[in-house]
Image (cartoon, rainbow, N blue to C red; front, top):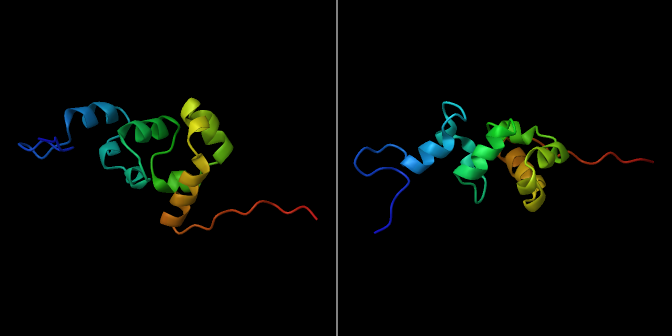
Length: 101
């Protein structure tokens, strides 16, 4: 038998999800950051701790700074891919590097 993220009896988030998102904001469990490919409560919690509370925040994020803010996870994961995903989701253009003549 597999467990679902929501308690079958109450329809509320599982105790693990509630514990992982506690203190990360009133709507952390319903964050649109869960739309990131492979995102779980741990990643959303870490992004929240780095000041990223939504895909819109992520779309506006400075990649190198977010990488530093996320520490080891920022070094392991490709933060740039997350930012591109968020910009597409928020219909924001991907910034192009400045071209020096």
